Structures are given as structure tokens and as C-alpha cells.
Amino acid sequence: MTMCCLASVNTMQVDGRTQVAVTCDPIDLLNFLKRDFLPMNLMCERAAMFEQLIYDRTKAIFEYFDLPFDAESPLDDRSDTSDNK
Image (cartoon, rainbow, N blue to C red):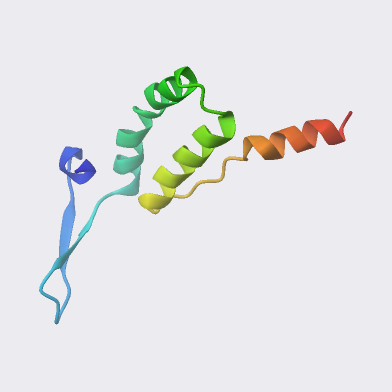
């Protein structure tokens, strides 16, 4: 469904296969997805989801689309601050 909203997608026929592979520019996909992260985070916070669960949901979206995700976990942040005290 997401691919339908992008400006362009590419299809590729693989020899010996009856189905085609669909690809898109990862930057186009990321630009499309990033518009919805703030509203998603606000809804999650309103639903009283813990910060780690919001992080996990965001990470799952990136993994689903095979996008790089290098943000630190909120749990990592807490352990760093507690070590410094």
C-alpha cells in the first residue's frame, strides 16, 4: 500500500519467475514515512505507551522496509545516565 503513494516505483522481472520485484528509492520512501512518525508518537504517548515501546514500533517500521535504523534505545540512554551518577 505504501508503494502506491510514492512518486515512482520500479519493477524488475526475474528470469524463471512469474512474479516481478518492486523497488523504490529508499530516500523517497523515508521522506514519505517520516511525515507520519510525529503523529504516531503523539498517539502512542496519548495511549500511555512507554518510550521503549514507541522505539520498538519505529524500529519495526524501519526493519519492515529494510531501512537502516541506528537510533539508540531509550533503555541504553537510561543506563548511560545511571552509570554517570
